[in-house]
Image (tube, rainbow, N blue to C red; front, side):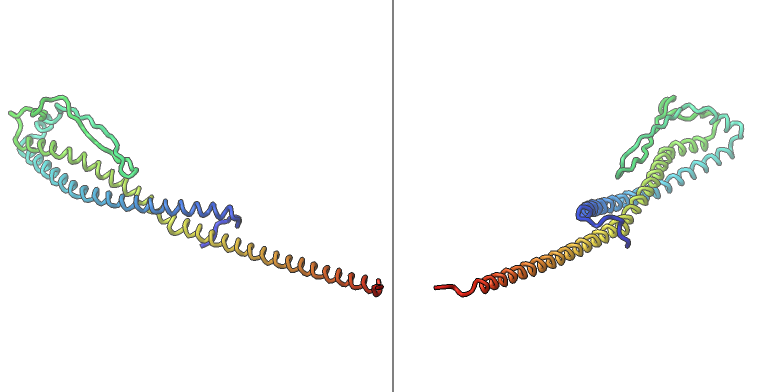
Amino acid sequence: MPVLNVNPTRQELNRLKTRLRTSVRGHKLLKDKRDELMKQFMDVVRENRALRRKVEEGLTRANTAFAAAAAVMSPEMLEQAILYPRESVSLEMGFQNVMSVNVPIYSFHTTGSAEGSAAPYGFAATSGELDDAVEALSQVFQDMLRLAEIEKTSQLLAQEIEKTRRRVNALEYVKIPQMEETIKYITMKLDENERASTIRLMKVKDMLLKEAIQERREEDAKAVRTSADAGPTQV
């Protein structure tokens, strides 16, 4: 793992150690976030599977009922019966925060008809199969809306999981090892410089000691010569 291009100084070493501690904490938080996102995602996937099966069964019943109604009614009468709906539907969308992911929340409201009279036609000129088809569609509509909400949620969670996984891998396999190698490199450099400084100081100390010894010897020799030149002491 190549080291970072930094100066091997003690200040840089302290800065890298601080960054390493922050990266380790961030790595742990991101791993916890990834695990929780995976748990949420699996719950959403299970609900999506069950809801999709329910919606498919409801749509199958509605299509079967419409096919039966088309078989006993003329195309013109069938089109006229469902041409002008009595109800209007308004769709509202909100957001819910799930592990820092804003997932959509859909809700709808119907207006324009009294309760129990949602069918846009009279019952005298239509068949019972058409009533069954309209009823089946009205029952499956809420599940279809919830299915759209769940599928969008699963898509957003999957994107966030992939983004978080890449960040975790980048920290675990690139950033943190690179900072550890750089810290090791700077520490070795500082130790090497410290040993070199110690050796230089020891050499300087030896040189100073030798000079002091030499000066002392010269002073002693000078004192001896001075005493010899002065001759014996008269009593």
